[in-house]
Length: 320
Image 1 (tube, rainbow, N blue to C red):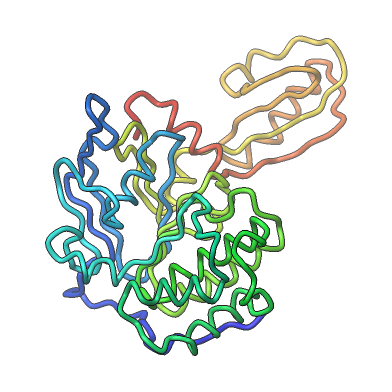
Image 2 (image 1 turned 180 degrees about the vertical axis):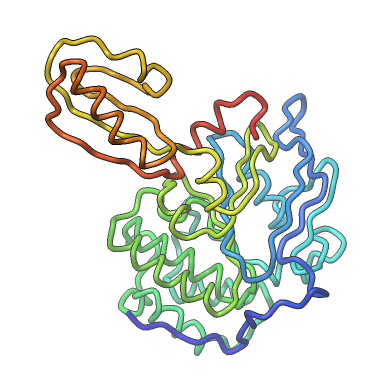
């Protein structure tokens, strides 16, 4: 797969006077009696790979729509690279590229025609050289003359990425970019996005594949009912909210010893799961299981993961 260097390279060095890539202040959005956003404050620095996570209905897409100017906040404001999305909307939209969750396309045009039309939205003429680079980078060159409705879902997803990048934005928003796509496309897309981020582009990612967010994002915000309930580095969230678990497959009908009572996460169908904080605790836990009369058949140690942390944060009253 071919990668390219952006003609207008974004620097990885951000000074203290540079504006945030995305700044959200007091964002409230109401649809009648429904409050989709309840006062969101968020600041994403230039060059970050940032994750915005939450269950369905948490307000993620509503917030992204407000960033892109597709809807207007009831209260509060949003700026992109220092440009207010309402008061300075032309500069804000030029600085932002959004890959939407839905497969939105015009069925009457080819891939190249779609990208030329998208270029025209930003007043870009003679943009074919850049379009060619995008097509090559996303493995779309062979499909350049193909009508959009003839493409597979995965190919349409690649075209949406190309559309978001056709005007060379410094800030890129990916709203569920790998939903329903195959493994090969997922890997290709993440290679490409990592390259963009390494070249200084700010990436905002929403995804329900939490292993992707854990691997890619340096900081994460979690939304619940339109409010930020957790915001920290990925490593800090993993350390604070998820637990190490000792999984033991056992045989026998003995009774669990009392000394394990505070560590038992679950025990069903011969699988005992015990929480622990220090690896030094494992030896005494195994000894207690044996002494109780169980035969140990299998042992596995699970490390903290973002899915476990996400579930714990979402179930905590009022969040974190």
